[in-house]
Length: 435
Image (cartoon, rainbow, N blue to C red):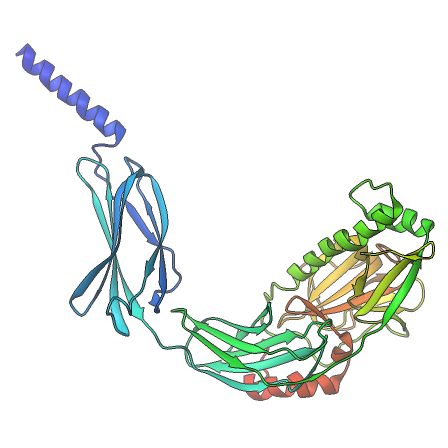
């Protein structure tokens, strides 16, 4: 009797130990498919996550079935991993599958004595056909530094639709199942570049269409600006995050590294495109009764003690307007404030989102009178001009950005340009509903 009790006790202890270690476990692994859509093209990738707390995943298998044909496409043994994330490559066409419905099956087994197994099945669509894209309208004449628009429609829901110009990509916006693609030709382009509309469906099938246009080269100004010790001590040094004794090296650092850092933040904000519908109406307005001091895309060299500072050149990516000291600054058009604060060489600044990936920048302000998240109307007072940042005299630096790239503001001041390039097409194709 004692031996039996001892044996039962040993078995019970062993069971408890195995249970604590997870070797005896009654729960099954959890499986998640991370793909937003399950349409499989010629080269599909399925992202799988499997979790098992105790004792962990022992092996994982993936099958795909169609028309009574079941094919194992993946199998891997695990060393009782508790959390497994992996990408499974599937080539449906090379497996002999055809367009249409199929079933994806994922099987995960844990490392317990009971070999608990979870099977997750999902209906998937096999799709090898590229999407059909209709270009409804596009801007015909574009300058370097100018803005263009493409209006397009797709035969199906898309994963993405983008304008491609060399290494640049501009996102298209889905408005009532019709796409509007605002883009810009960089100001530094000297000749015509191919523009493509690239569509990717949910199965990663791609269609590429060429966008015809006429290119007009604008020769922007070049200038040489003299700087002195007082300018470096009072304007440059306070903007540096490094102690650089050499005045020339200090200027180069601020005017290149700090400038790039500030402009990268501006580009990031102006690339978010959260408000897809246009909030702007009519032409954009600028500082009243003002003289234009600095033009868009001016290429500037800098001279110190009679010598050009090599490696410190910079483009001026907006307009400089000067009126009276602390002149009132107004919102250029309807929109939403997405940034307020100090922005390095740009000083106290405001960025307004006008919808449809269009943003305006107001810099060197002495006063900011709006807050982030605030809706503003065209002509609404938002601050005062000043000399903050890298500004010598009191003025407003004003910029327009489209899809994260600076563009020539003069087009946005011209109602005729806006009507023929955007408003008329928007009204006829989208219907003018921007709510």
